[in-house]
Image (cartoon, rainbow, N blue to C red; front, side, top):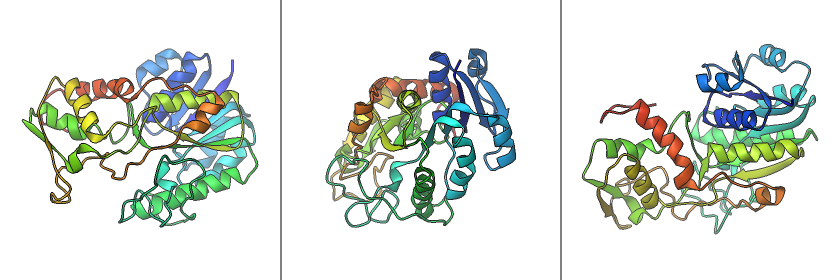
Length: 316
């Protein structure tokens, strides 16, 4: 039985990866600060409560080696440096990065003051931010630190695959973006305001689709960068309808023109021009998505509805 270790396996991506690997017959161990869902343990996952920065504890859990090492919590070059001794004893290693590393021709990125203009689907060859060491949990530091971590791992020459997802959705995600519309639907608000007529697009990434790509990479070790997004990129209007339907609600859609106040009707996917990731490289490797956005987001919506069945109740 092949062995996989998932660092940060209690979050949305880690849970999905563990479920996928368990279903494929792997022995799966996960680490995290909070306990994994009981259904994962029941399915055979082993759990160790370990802080990501406790290097000795992480190495103790890793032991003598693994067939697959997945790091969902690698945010800095220092994190990547601590991962290298483990990666040397893993057949395949996966590091979760982000599309936040990409810049357009003017150096604009998703966290910059001005919206980026990529001019079409973004491939893995798109330029990135320069590496940086400022606080990684800030808008200015997140992307540069991810780039620094990526380069540290890829420059090692080890079989490390860097995955760059976009707006992640799935059961267990720490900040579920769909709650923006779901909360309003649960409150039975009669109308929804959508900036720029709801045309904004920021490519979503289902945790289960990311997990399917991890499964492919596990069987094809190599040093590479891959985008990791859903097979479709619905706009804000489509997402609002999908989410409202899950709550059994319908509302009047107020499609605001471009001359509306800038913050009115803004939602998490409001990107114009759209941001869409090119998935050709992943498909060429053999990746096949589990499903489109409307299909894969249902698990997260059910999870949210179970946690917040009453209107007005907050989730985090």
